[in-house]
Figure 1 (cartoon, rainbow, N blue to C red):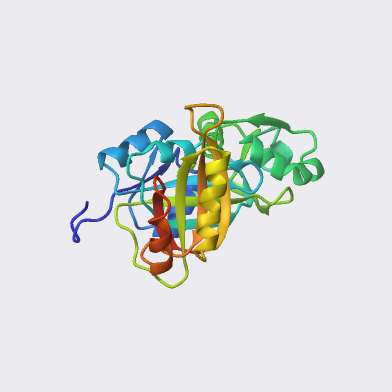
Figure 2: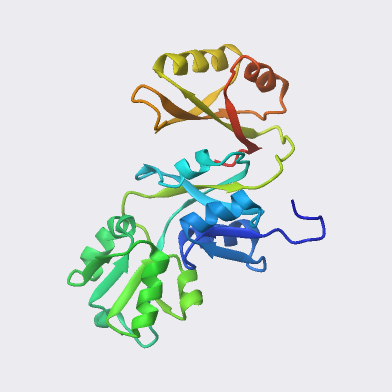
Length: 272
């Protein structure tokens, strides 16, 4: 844990110029030091204490659970301290001097391509659509190429990171992707009166019914349930359950005493 006079070490899923980068800027401000890391390094930094907080995308409205939820569940002691949701809109980023007429190929994550398809069909119908691992990687590749014929789709922050310019902003005409991030930290925030708690139960279908019934009987409002494989057997799953309330609230604390084996992944202010 950081000393009170020591700035927190914050990391996010890189590379720079991704939506996770933008989420960190929204959450912590542009003057806070944040570090981009790949998936393995990000979770290793949190587990080892090298990072005090990490920002991870966990749910999207277009594809559901992301590949980053399972690594969170694999941590021995995750502590969700905040959530953040944002509807994604895109900028077309290119090298300086490029115009829309110059663009022959547009690089982006496949989800970004799906979301900007209507705009691309109308404005750049003949441009090739090249898939990349992340939108940050797309901007990085455009900058590296120096080509006036290449552009990327992504958050506008990519222009500042890689020295690009935006040829169009606010492009969002697809399935309206809202992404939700978790911030993992070290200490559970104090109750605010409008909180959310995320629980994890590893059980079979019958056990899930019992767990949900116990929560409802205790007056706990269930918000969402996500299923993940337990990797132990076909009939056992890990269920991630969002409920209204804080683990420090008497009602939830009492119910949890009747739910043995339930992990509390975090209690934090409810913002989405």
